Length: 356
Picture 1 (cartoon, one colour):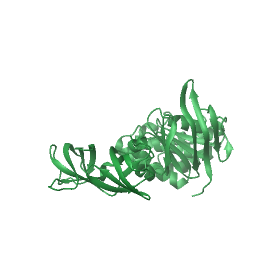
Picture 2 (spheres, helix red, strand yellow):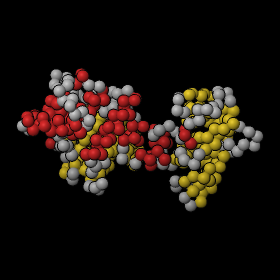
Picture 3 (cartoon, one colour):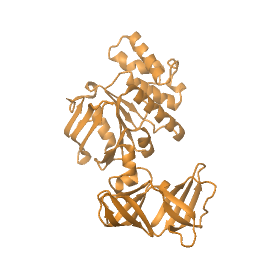
Picture 4 (cartoon, one colour):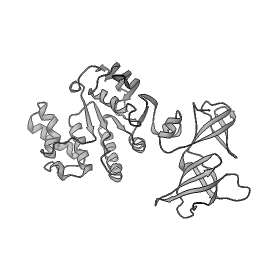
């Protein structure tokens, strides 16, 4: 992948009256990357996307696309395209005419526009459906038409504004795979906005987690999941049990961590001896029948739910309640039962910045 910087934000802020929607945000997107802006409602991710598109202009800071400053340029001068969550298809036009629309209004001859639209429909897996009306397509097909309408313009940056939020869970998973395949096939630089953590982890080269108008952490999905920068990221990226622990000793980059009666060897992450916060992923918890002298934490099953491929439990322990995902659906633990709680080698991380 080229290391050319396609998009750069330099200390960009946006105010709406007294409300700060984005505060001194800086980041880069490398050519061909798909970067996701992830965060809860009101964190600033959609405003950031709209500033890339030119639909909002910054109050302060600068925006560059391919090294050219575009901070004050209108949307029509930025060579970017956006895919909206509502699809925004013209209901009275055929699928082919919807895809060709942007080309025809920009002056492309009609025959060329339709030929390029047909080629793009084939690219997104909708070849032969150009004569249909949008209402004759499924939700997933309509979303792919919206993508085709955007990429037919060959934009420098493709923007996605929560494009899967109107789809049901099963279809959402399939369409996100389609979108990722199309993006990688074209190598088009893309910025994607969502509040869905699983979606962000599955589709992204990098994830920028936003909180209260600022960037909380920026990195590859695995880094954010396994090494969260703080309590907020640990809690927001996937399910995490946040429990108090004690760092008993630090030896180089490793820490001996005491959790109840269990001693764990974990990356120290720059922390010193003393109280600390530990993020425990639900899949990292191991449950077994309790026995005398068992070295695990003693726990009581408060809730048990069968979900077909796995069990979900809530376990009361001396260090607090733990949410557990267990792949064993045969030897299960009923509510009220006693269990020993242990931990796997993955899915445990000390959380910097929280030693209270």
